[in-house]
Amino acid sequence: MTSIADIEIPADGTGTGQLFEAVPSLTCEMERVIASSGHGLWLAGPSQSEIEAALDEVDAIGTYSQISSDEDRWLYDIEFEPDTVDPFEIVLEEGGTVLSASASDGTWLLSIRVVDRESVSSLYDRLDDNDVTPTIVRLFDLAEESHSQCGLTARQYETLVAAIDHGYFEIPREVSMQELSEELGISHQALSERLRRAYRALVTAELNVTEEDTAAPPIPSN
Image 1: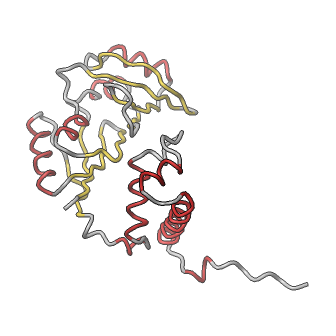
Image 2 (image 1 turned 45 degrees about the vertical axis):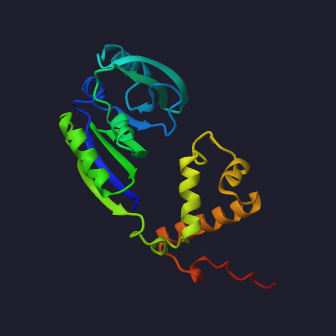
Image 3 (image 1 turned 90 degrees about the vertical axis):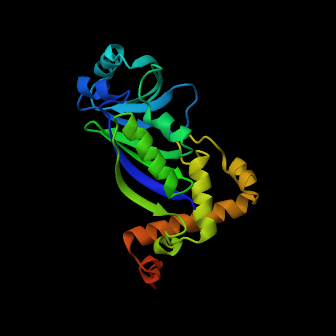
């Protein structure tokens, strides 16, 4: 049974530990798709010159190169040295999928999808063996997480998960709507309608509004 685990991991002892020591105000966010042997990390907080000075000094980082930039943050492809503890690779080796990963104040928060709860236990032990003890913030089975709680049907939920997995919500998009519809085996129009209904369900659930609240106001007569 597929499970989702949200875990906190201290950066200390990992490839990014020294980086946070050098620039404590640093914030990181992992790019969902890794295009090379390294990791795509959005770095922000200090100036770019301070960030690159720290990247040059950190022993755990083998190579890095800037890929892109967005306002006051910069996307780097970073490759760690072979003997570095890399929690992202450990997750992959344990059969998990990193759905999201961000860090600030020297702590990483990862949302991970695994095949079952036993996999979470194996992942915990593997990280702990590498002196990186995680804290499980949240753990739930997808089958137990009612889609109706956020107003989604099962198909809408599966479609949103597929869209995330294939990079539809990335900036820039990594897959077009046409490509995603072909992947799901539905028409472009059906995908568009399903996504719009899913967006509406999520927004109304998050804002805690009713159908009456979202109904268009009557047009005043002259």
